[in-house]
Structures are given as structure tokens and as C-alpha cells.
Amino acid sequence: MEDVQVKLSPGVVGGDGGIGDGAGVAAPKGHSSKDVLEQGVGLMQNLVGAVKSAINFSEIDIASLGLQIAGTTIPHFDLAEIAAMAPGAARKAAVAEVITAMRAVGFIAIRAPDVCARVNGVHTQMGSMFHQPRAQKEKYDHKNRGQTGWYDKEGAPGNDKPNNRECVFYTPNCLKADEDLKPDERSEWPEDCPEHGFNVGEYRPVITDYYKELVECGRSVLKVFFEGLGVAPEKSDEYIDKGVHRLRLAYYKEPVPGTEWASAHTDLNFLTILAAASLKGLELLRNGVWTEVSVADGFVVLNGGDMLEIKSAGMIRATPHRVTAPEGYHGERFSTPMFLTLPEDTIMMPWESCIEQMLGEGADSGLTLEGLRAKFPIKATAIQTLLSRLFEMGSFDDDAPPAREFVEELLSLGLLRNPGDRIKGLFSDLFGAGSGAASSTE
Image 1 (spheres, rainbow, N blue to C red):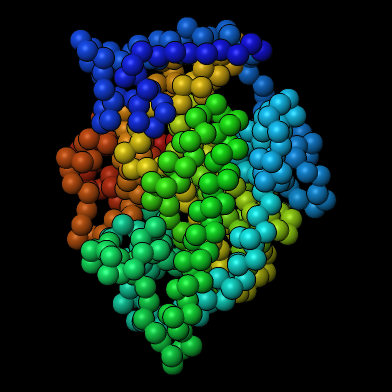
Image 2: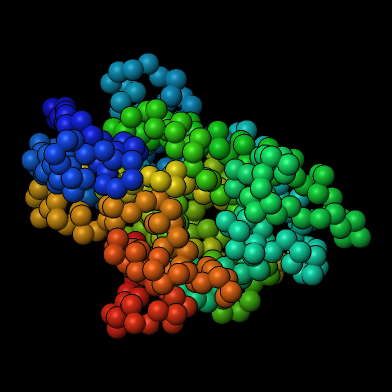
């Protein structure tokens, strides 16, 4: 396939490397932001037919992708080895294979020995923290403060029934000294509880060091992904340095009959890094079949979230997954997903390189520019997209519900497509009888 280069007029390219509309996008003199948007996507539409037709990724033999490791169920890669390759055909093919695997499965595993070396220590500290009495954990309840602190339950998008787990979230502020932050910006660190064997002086550095290791792992991943997606490589550093990435320490309690540890869902964020949990149970949905995710030692799992599906114009889908307890198991499970997010002001218009490829691939299947625009909330920001999903899950405090004006704004942007009963109950007049249908990624 010939390389296709697109040159846009000054002001067309938004602050996140995609064609934007709204904050941070300067329209050329005499043109509105809407004009700029129409001009940019019009150029993309003209490229239909310049790219090969779509591959049926659901039929790809995933066992042929990446490293051949017995007993595994998703493609495995050594991204450090790929990143060290000299520019040329071999490197291009290796990067393309990573993207193909993400498109075919949505989940891959990458070699990450430095992350894996810390996991057991993190699980040990999680046990000492979560095993404290409930009254002790309630002292650092999240209090609706930017997803930090302790949650006694969580749900999934469009499902108000809570999952059987507790969790604690940490954001980049966990790396900063409390005296350098405003009171409402500080992470909710637990208090010492010597009578139950918990010491925050031991817990905090283990968690912060793990957080930093995961962030740097994410940086190396994005460099390879962006190379394969045709996104400016410097965007990887921008997204890592400015994103409000969330580390979730999840404690799955002893299974209760009739419940799942985590019900089927897609991730809200951009990209998730997941080191080995203390027990198996993660399953992904591919071609209508639930498959256990089995990964080799020394590797971590990567999966794309809703934000990556949007920014890649659907090239990389957010794959539904769930966590189920093994049959007959009576015990607990610890898991530590790192949710990499986009900078909050990122406009969610897909990257032009991905629009170009998706429109070209859809030339034979009826995919159109209008179809892409209807599918994705292209004028929303990353934070609006994230909050929309949290509201769908009912993840807000009773004494601090979403403002009506903000809900109306999200709806006008094409968000809140999969509302749960809680948000619909508060704003029943805004959600018609047909609302609440499952989204295309569930």
C-alpha cells in the first residue's frame, strides 16, 4: 500500500494530535471551529479507497501472533526488543504485528520483569490493609474525592448491582508530599493499625514505587503503539506525563453464590496494565466465547479501554471481560490494574491516521464518515467521557449527585449512552424509554 500523507491547514490539528473542536483548537481566520472540523474530516473522507479493505480480525489465528509460549491464551510480545530494532522493514512488521494482535483480541501480554518483581510485595501490603476492620477502612473512605481512598463496593457500566470486591484508588498525587498539595488533592492514605498488623510506613513506599514502575511501563508501551497507529511519537510522553492515571488495588472477597467478582464490562480508560493477580479468574469475550486469560511468568496484560477505541476510530476495540471465581474456590483474590488515562482536556476526535485507515477499510462494507461520527463522541473531552461512564455506573455519592446542567451537556455530546438505573432515576425526564440499551462494546 502506498503511504498516504495528509496536510491540514493551520489550526486544524488539535492539542492532542487529532482533529479537534472546542478548547485548545484555533480556527484559521474567517473560519469557525465547526468549519475546521468539517474541513478536516472531509479530507479524511476523500481517502476512502486509498487503503486496503478490512481484514476480518475475528478470524485471525491468534496462536500465530507474537512469541510462541505454551499454555498461554493471548499473544505475547517483548516490546523492549521491538523498540531496540533499527528502523526498517523488520521493525515495521514487528510493530504491525502488535497492532494486529490488539485488533484481533484486544488483550496482549508484554514482558515486564521489573513490574512483575514487585507484585508479591504489593499483594502482601494489600492483605494487611484490606484485612483491617471495616471501621478502620471507613476512616479513609473515598468521599467523592477524585477516585482516591477506599470503596466498599463497585459496579459495572449499565449495571447497578455491585461486584463482590473492595478497592482503593491512587492517582499521580500519591507520588507527591502531602505538604505540596491542597487538602482536597491529597491521597487518602490509611492510618497505622498496629493491633491488626498494618503499618502505613511500610505500605506507602511499596505502593508508590509500584505506581512509578507501572507508569514507565506504560510510557514504553505507548511509544510502540503510537508508532503502529501513525500517531506522533512525542504524544506518548505527553499522555503519560499529563494523564491522571489511576492504580486500583482490588480486593475480591470470598465468592458469594450468585455473584461475580467483577461482572462483564469494558474499561473506561485509555489503556490498562494488569500484572498477575493472586489467583486466576480473568476472562475475555472473543467471538461470543468467554476465554480464560492465561499469561506466562514475567509478563503483564495490556488491554484497550473505551478511550483508545474512540481515539483509534474503532481500530482497537475495548474488549468485554469479567472476573469469575474458579468453581469450588473459597478464598480471596488481589489484583492491581493500572488505568492509564488521557490528559483531561484531550478532545476525543479520533486520530486522523486511524480515521484514514478505518474509512479505507470500510470502503467495501459501507462504513462512512457519518457512521464514524455517529459512533464516537468526537467533541467531548477525555474527562467528560470518563465522568459519563462513572455516572452510568452510579459511581457518585448520594449527597453529591451530578448537576442537571452537566448531565444535559454530556447528553448533547453523545455521552451517557448506557445509563444505569441510578442516573436514570435522578433524571428520568432526560432518559427516554429506549435509554439504557447496551453499548456496542458491552
